[in-house]
Length: 319
Image (cartoon, rainbow, N blue to C red; front, side, top):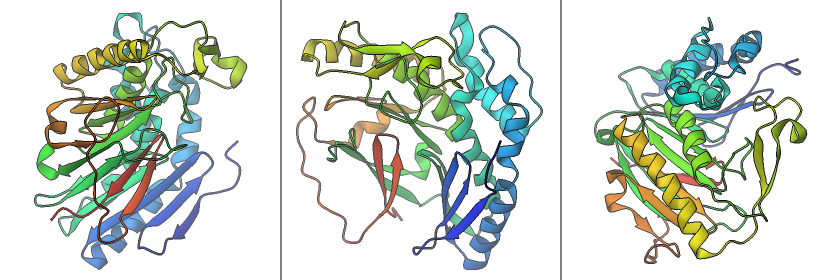
């Protein structure tokens, strides 16, 4: 079921690429070379068994948390359930798979828990776990539509902000969405928390319009954990009023998640319009029809680039 075995490749910039079936991670670390090397090795040793571990409990992980009590055995699986369970209250349909990528990223990041490592990043197909020590940080640039890439927002993220996880969900991504967001990027204390909340907030970015194409999830992908729930397959150009309504609904959900302490901030993208929620964005520079345009200078040297669903994160040193 898992196909070819785990693969590991060193990248030219010092990062490493781990891949096994659908799990595709770019892993980076800064700090003492010997500590970073040991961290990479620990991360790899943990990675090699991850897919088989998750497959062994897949039926539980695909169960609706809003209907049954799920208690998996694996550490990653438990992290997935813990991240998703708060969102499944009140009868909402949600499975632990909503946090699978972020939970894997969090698990691998543990390998870099060494005081000699100043920064580490695990990007699992766009869901990102970060290690930051005081005095370090990143500048993060977001692109709402990678089909027509342009910098929509840029912000400075520091260790003091409390963000250690970033995740994106939307109808254009690899996973299904019930809403019409091109991308919803969530900033949270962990990648698993960000991953689960990204699904919920992206689902809330929605409006009714007969031209929006929706199909049962299991008719689009027969192994979908969403069953016959209608997922968004195509969204035509929408009038500004409908875009504003969809963004307002998503922002309300994001504000609820912030108030509940589950996330730090959210960035919502719909057809070139951007809505930022949370004090993290107080100093954000934006360039979107919904915001004043600010020209952002290019960095003096090429940054690491991490693709996040429909978002591109440009990550640079902030020492």
